[in-house]
Image 1 (spheres, rainbow, N blue to C red):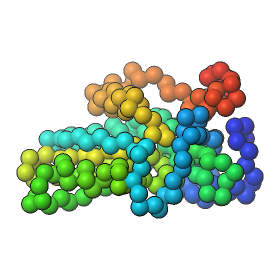
Image 2: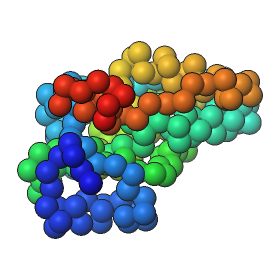
Image 3: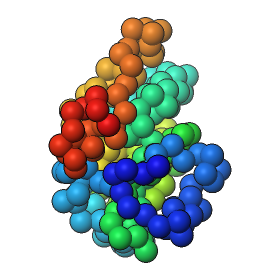
Amino acid sequence: MLPLVALTEEEIEQIVRTVPGGAGNVQDIYPLGASAGRYPVPPSDGGEGDPYLLAVQLSFDTRGRLDSYIQAMQAVVDRHDILRTAVLWEGLPEPVQVVWRQARLHVEEIELDAESGDAAEQLYARFDPRQFRVDLRQAPLLRVYLAYDQQQERWLMMQLSHHLVGDHSTLELMQEEIQAHLLGREASLPTPLPFRNLVAQARLGVKPGGA
């Protein structure tokens, strides 16, 4: 049942075909939220950058700390359906958000040239949002790129997140939850609310708990 969006059986089948694991990995389908609905969905194969892409760069003194951080990130993605969401629009009457039950973080390690200058600047230039975009059709709308900085003997991580799944406040909340997982305090985190409730509130005028 899809009370928030009207789709034909053929359109639903089209959506399911885009999700790894098929129907069993589809948790929910709903239209874009009020703010996201104003976002102009770009062609995913375009060569231009995306001004709605947020970039954050972190550094770690060991690969072990980096791996632990990524594991905590995955745990946060597992908790929140908005972080397991893809956006589809091709052949549909309106863009929709598709929540995957399971969405693995895209993590890619690249090699930098130690003779080509500052490693952090190289990594940022490689994935500069002004020239780089992510495929909105693949959840999560988070991407992680890793590189070893030989000069500083550290690991760098470039995190890209799309405005469709959050803003700077969202990133701050994610960081708090990641920290809780790293400290073994994940049991203290509140139960996440279904994002569809917020969409229903915006689209139908219902209370957050009434969807």
